[in-house]
Length: 357
Image (tube, rainbow, N blue to C red; front, side):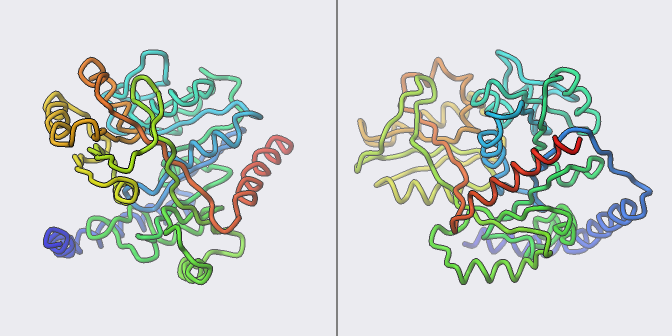
């Protein structure tokens, strides 16, 4: 509690920098409004998934959701920056590729959806033509975390915001978490409130919609996180938690709070090793994991991690393969019976684009 209070107080001291950052964002937006800076369009359906703030709002699980929704009818490709990879420029996923080469999230997608073209590139405007050259059969491109990349104008934009940190209540970096103008939410086609309280009421839903103030053309959806059955990192065999399970939770994600809450509800005891988002695990980290695991009760303890972290732990297979180290999948679950409406909006966009083009 003291740490959180200190952090908030320190960030308030950075308010002048936040005002300066807002001014830069405002000028950039003004230049685009005046057409002094221009956005490019492509003759292919582009779906952007993004947010206005830094941190995890559930973009990767939504990309997975969209792939599952569209992959049986269209040839899908994904394009992201490939955050914290050791390479630069455009690249695409190939057999034996590592997280250091393309990033953890792209590698995770490539492993789960081998039929999908997975590419990375800081400059999306330059990367899209290269992607289409390498994968000419591509029919739909999903742009991960590209809302702030205004050099490209996508045909469908999905903007995510967490219920616990709505963009309407946030402030600009570094005092707050906003990395783009609040007013830019008006440029999205769909607003998705994520990581909602599973017990969110209809009245609370309406209150959030009133606060966000969507345009008449915008639709607001609500999702909660749903965790699947954990599976072993290497053998892929699944498990069900026992009532006496003890867990060592290993995470390198931006917001582990929902997962911690799930672990607390499903286990008797847990310890946690928490690292920064996209952390590259080292030999010292491996030793810490092994040492912390030994503190759990024998025959009751397991190591639990996320799918994003799993691809960064695979390099330690020789040391970890004999341990009970499990990966827990996560997905979006639409609330208030609105899944079909969301699916229809996405499908209609792609279908209409193909007809009109």
